[in-house]
Length: 98
Image (tube, rainbow, N blue to C red; front, top):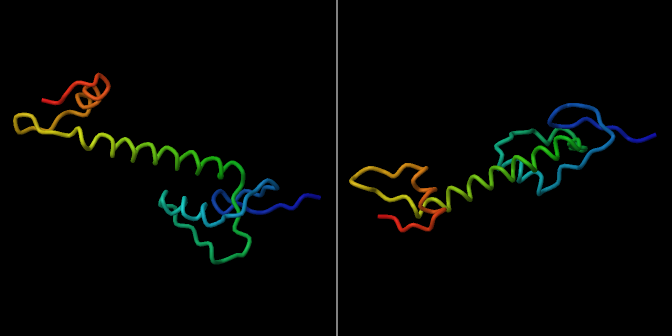
């Protein structure tokens, strides 16, 4: 019989799980998920939650990369900040900013 454990995120019982290791803890921290991992030695997450947190982490990383990429393109025009659509257009079309 396969061992079953309770997922620390969704609380579902599963026999397909992964132990919450150091990397997973760091990902949970970046995603601002506050989970008390001190209560039990078997801190595990189910396969579905594992897939979800890695997908969310990739999305958040992509957003932060986009923010860092756009920051140099932010300029002021006539005392007003550029619209994000204009920034994307200038970047996509390799147009120099005014």
